[in-house]
Length: 254
Length: 257
Image: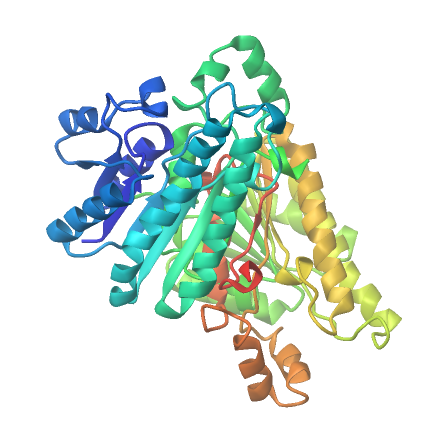
């Protein structure tokens, strides 16, 4: 059975992705922070323990993607149990606190925290799984970037920069590892209703303002992004590598 | 499991060969009733025969997509025979070699007419029906030539760039009617259309042109019609429900470099 690892799989897009991949027959391992940990998980998501309690079919490992020792240990655990990793979904990400706005007002520690999760995280996780994928002569690394990697989100300098970096990291992996039959693709969602964004979208006036800018006239639901991850993970789009798959309801087409 | 296009009526232009034939076959396997539109009647019929032999439903339609009367009559015919069109894959296209210095004006006009005006005419015909029936999905055919300059294919590059821009424009305009519009930018696919291009690139030697072209692809091979057809299926289906105005590049990593 094919094995997929989903970081940040305890809430939002990651949770929907883990569910979909399980439905599609993958052995899915979710890496996430403990529920009592820091970061956006405590801002509305559930944590690693909650997933393991709620669904015994789901393998969950507490992991901080910004910490090399934690990532290496988690990947070693996956390999010890399953012996292979076919798909890595670099989903864990944060937008930064509400203090992380325009560049000159962004607290330096917020900049570092956003880049640690959104860029260092995919770097460390990809770095940990690539030797196995090279040995397998197959693998697919799917990174959830953002349409903010293509067009700037107003008042979100750190997030925008981090997603641009995640996108180019994806292209770099695609170019360097194609020779080992390893593909790397990014998904660039627009606005999605998740625990990370609900604080904004639950305010009716803010939601209306956001949805007015989207040609399809609505935000996405997590499963609409999970569908795309599942299609990529299935291998059906086998000639796609190094690609930013934009799923934004037409936002960036304007 | 129900097919991904169960109950849908799909039109595939240029469905008589290459990517279009692969897409028509795949759409039919996924449950669509497929209208195979091609300029060459025998080519469309051959695709239809293959689909029907495999247990699918298909209809051959002959039209030149630069002729608005022919296009409109064709879509009326499809709507009457199969039901209202819900999916359109604007796959039909022509190639045209030469830089701005060497291309003929005739070649330029033909390339722009088929690739851009043809896409416009078919989209308009399909969208009129989709607006009345709650929406649909239009998939356009771009090319990596819309994103990077490909040597000695000036008109082709320009035409595909126009298709990408037209896609974004249609996505914005048609979203309120529930019509999604996306564009595929394939890398080099080994098709009948591409073989003369490889010969030109290899200085008259197709094999040499092929090797030179493969060298540009990190994944180490050219695309197959099926590689692109699978992307078209994804965009046509509800799996891509939140995608519109997107540019999808199945190109083996060529433009990631």
